[in-house]
Image (cartoon, rainbow, N blue to C red; front, top):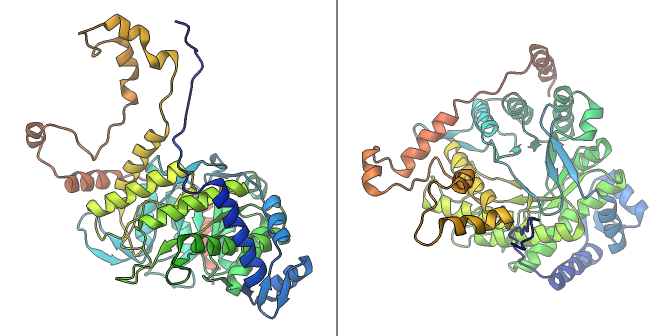
Length: 478
């Protein structure tokens, strides 16, 4: 046929800023760090920054551009994460995307009754086990909330519950360096020690500067501890247009980048080459309600721009998609999540967090929303595979064999390829009479049914000696 047999592949790609805009945002970011600076009160960090060439005046630190760019060059461009057993599962680099749900929250939406209650530790056992059985979620995250345990140890109780119910890599938030250390010790126990952890970490710590341009001492403690121990660190500000950042999207991007990169400078001065993940939750203040919006289209636009900045810096990225401001799994929830996830995947948003479960602008976790968003992620992953063009897929001989007026239903080529089409458990395509005869289940009924079925999954229990060791650790938590 004269056709090439090599596969021609094109990955769908989204760019929301061009190269000239990226260069201008970077230059503006350096200007903010050099001219405005950041507020840090941490004595050791101030000493390290001053010794490296930053200008320190009281608690105001002005960082020269060369120091920022040195830190960018020193940080690794690739981070490999592993499941709790040490099995490598996430390769974070370039424009790859890996989606993960946040498992705990302020409130919990019961999928059986749709009643909302305060989130307790048993709820995270349920959401973690659900994440474990949903294959398009490659990692998970906790913020350390449980209303039924003392607040001082809730972050570690939640992390332990996840380790016991989900094998996937964990991104965790916690209150201080002692909590980081305790979670790290659990991870080392589960993966088999420091050497294996260093080859492919099983946990990532999430920390935040305070917008605009402020670092709380405990956050700096955690940044430095993670650098010293090579625990991958996400430094993730949350600037809100009109509130804690400029109302213009470019201004918010500049401030967000300055906030994330300032943490990188401290991190790399402590331990050059330690794994660092850049990013920011850039969104808007809804001026009608004053909420920090999780469903705004502007959030997706700015997240995509930040992803492009990360690719320009050759730094791993922490993105956001698959959340909603809706209160229930309704049309608003599906529309907001779908747009965010397609945007994140097409832009290449690295570790994509808050992907499902989080609803009502980050105030309630919902297993049903996890299942809905997981199906959307599956569709987007399908879309992102693009259209392979090969001698086999062009199907010229098949078209010639069937000819005008024929059909392909029983052709061997159809039998070979038809299963590559995506079919959903919750979205149906029956004609009306078929749907009626099958029980006339609404989307909400199908979603609830599938969710409850998947929540029956229980991962293999941890060995008894590991559980005993975790019990001993927990007894010492303060």
